[in-house]
Length: 133
Image (cartoon, rainbow, N blue to C red):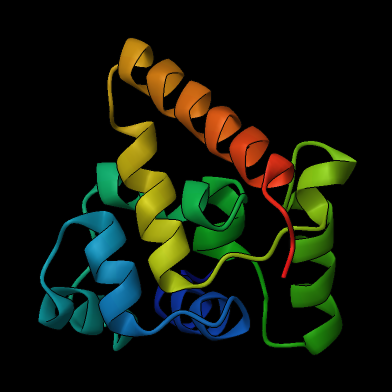
């Protein structure tokens, strides 16, 4: 059976994506100390948390649990292959606060998400018509 590499992979992926432990624990809605214990291998997250972590990094649960991200090329390949759904999205890199905002947005009801998208479109249109200094 393959060796469980969860703790090491969590740390490597977090660092490659530029997140702090505080960023990730906030996105997962857990205490920073709990997340730290996961990365140090002192505790193993429950299955729902493992699924959330895999989704955060756009990888499969198998890759998170058993993948080898110790090589720079392996990590870069995973990020390139799974970081975005469309070419337009692949140009976007989120920092911790932006990722938290996106996660909060995704947790809202669909109708509220629609209202937010409409508001953003309105603001962009408004800003594009204002004279530039």
